[in-house]
Amino acid sequence: MIFKKRKHPLPKFPESVIPTFRQLCEAVESDEAQELIPEVDKCMAHFQRLKKKHENMNLQLAYEIADRCRFLLDHYDSFTEEQQSLIMGAVRYFAIADDALSETAFASGFHDDAKVMNYVLEELDLLERVIAL
Image (cartoon, rainbow, N blue to C red; front, side):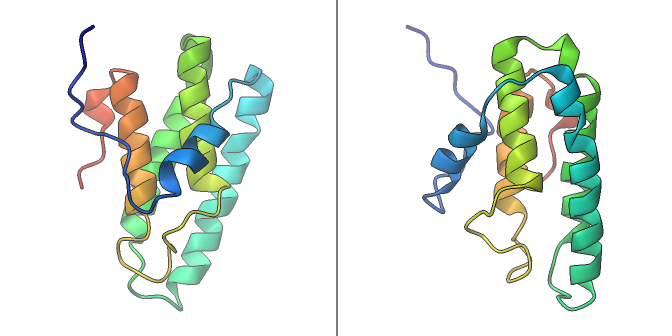
């Protein structure tokens, strides 16, 4: 068996990242995936409002993750079912899930979201879209 050495593995800390991401991975019909685009936009509007109170929040990183979410959702139909499952996991992790690292408490609050997204982008062989961390 050949093991692929990953440049972008899933983060192991906080401990809830991997189980939360895996739980969110589920391929859905295209129209249901498209319904997540407004959720991503709503999430970003929420983060923009929070930034006024939390100056440490890395809003630029959130914009980059949201951009990748939109790209993946726009091209959702061109991926296999297994790949779609990963896409849904990454988008949901960013836009819907309550993750262990608060986006507002630390400048690194989106770091786990970005690492999850980078893991998925590597799995999809979209290395040109990986977020610089």
